[in-house]
Structure formats: structure tokens, C-alpha cells
Image 1 (cartoon, helix red, strand yellow):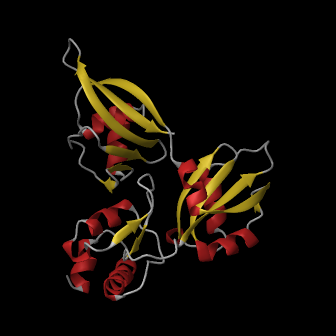
Image 2 (cartoon, one colour):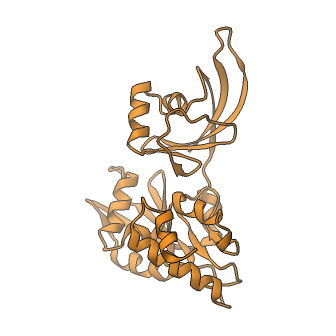
Image 3 (cartoon, helix red, strand yellow):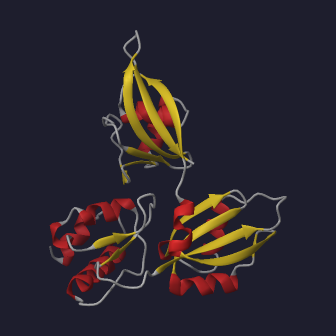
Length: 252
């Protein structure tokens, strides 16, 4: 695949950024030493790269519960990722995911230059490039009116702590259509569910989908922006009215 064809494959993405990714992937293929991209990519990008035969030797670095990941050529090398812990030491004011995200970006760091942000109680954990960690540690000491304390962790020492818990729920739904399932998962109306799908707020297996009638299957992962991430379990039966009894799990 040439550069033009690659960019066309990702027509919904920024063309300049995709051109840069193409060059990075081509370098990764040709280099005999460890090489990784200097940006994180969302599932809509890395899922498609993994499916391309041209890049079958390219790996995606990050855990299976990460949304944003980086590419590398698979050769042995030092893990380029680290984890920055941000502790809110003003416990009377609660900080949200958006607060932490905005604070990091206010330092002049583009969103694609760091990975997922995990919020647990009064702390957030950022997946970052190791060579960017010091800049964040030295420049972020306050979020809004809240003083914060930052700690750098080795990736391997903390990453398993970030793995979300799966909370089991059982639901009765009329069908496995995407709009029906999203309405149940987000605990909203069918019309609101449809609106979220049309706005691109719903990801199916980490890919944006606007097909409201898409049939959901066991094992699928559904992300609803601002509502959470869910995994579809098994269909355990039907009701007397013909509705489906389904097990699903919410990532907490």
C-alpha cells in the first residue's frame, strides 16, 4: 500500500497525522533496532493497522484494556511507557476525568502525546511516554484550586493495578440491535440511544459505528462516551414474551 492509499483508508482521521503514521510504520518495518511511534492512537486506527497484511510484523503496545496505544516493530527494547500518578491532596474538592485531562493538556501537551487516563478515587493515573514524564512532574502542581502531588511509576509496577473491575449485571432486552443494547447499558431511552449512536459516541469493539441496527454478539465490547465501557456476556434465556435475558459486565 502506498502513502496515498494508506491515508485514504483513514479518511475520517487527520490526513497529516495519518501521513506521519505511514512514514513511522514504514520506518519500523525497515529498522533493525527497536522503534516505536511517538504518538498514541485510538482503536479506530490500531484495529485497522492490525488487520493490514503489510504491517503484520508491527505490534501494538499497551494492555487489552487500554483504548489508546502505540505501535512498535516488535524488537526487544526498553519499554517506552511509564505511569504518572496524580494525587488530589485537597480532599474536599473532587476532580473528574475531564479535570485531569484538561490539566495535562493545559501544559501544552497534545492529546495524542499521552495515553489513557484512569481515575480511581482521589487519584488519576496517566499512561505517558517515559521521556515526557519529567516535564509533567515538573510543571503540574495544581488543578483548578486543588493542589496535587505527582509520582512517577515504572509501567510494569503499576499497570495491573489499573485493570478495571468487571461488575456483572443482568438485563432483559427486546433484541440485540445496537440501539436497543445501548439504551439498556446507558440506562436511557431508545431515542437518546439513537442520538448517541448518530453523534459517534458509541464504539463497538473499539470502532465507531453509526449502524443502529447492527447485531451485537456475545463477547462484544461497547463503549458509550460519558457512560462507560461494557462487555456483553452470554444470553441466558428468553422471557415468556420472547425478550432476551442477557448478562453483561461494566468496567469500573
